[in-house]
Length: 65
Image 1 (cartoon, rainbow, N blue to C red):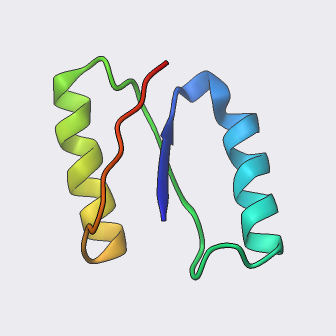
Image 2 (cartoon, rainbow, N blue to C red; image 1 turned 30 degrees about the vertical axis):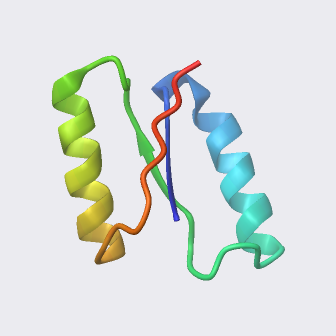
């Protein structure tokens, strides 16, 4: 599983990853990819990075709010 977040939200993303990895809620390590979904260029980079690190993509949810 991969998550995206704004760079200034790094502490929260790290805490979530630690929680999920500790309790084995995710099959493999959670991949954290910081960046801003308001940037179309970053969105393309996000998909490429997630695909490369995960090997495939089954589902994408974009929720900026």
